[in-house]
Image 1 (cartoon, rainbow, N blue to C red):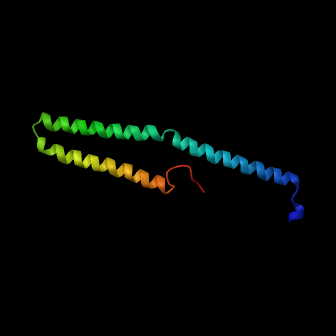
Image 2: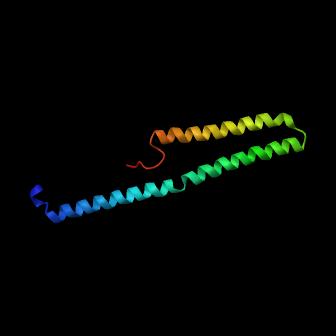
Image 3: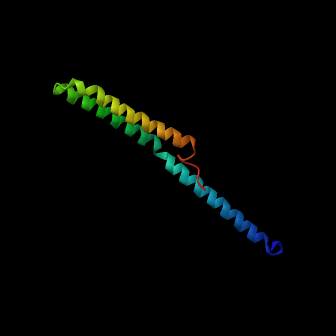
Length: 98
């Protein structure tokens, strides 16, 4: 089999491998391009929800529901950020593909 491998074959194999690696890198870069904006938008929306529910509770005189709402939303945010960090540290968050 080794006698049948010509220099043209090797050149084609190397070019294909290079193209595959460049595509893999480009896909990973594209995936990570918008990630900071998405995370920032989610955190901003969560902050706005906290403000809205706080205002709503105070406007209608239901101040006893402010603390549970803030606690729940803070827990959701912390869980989301924690889950993102765990996934990122285990290699599920982006540039690794096989």
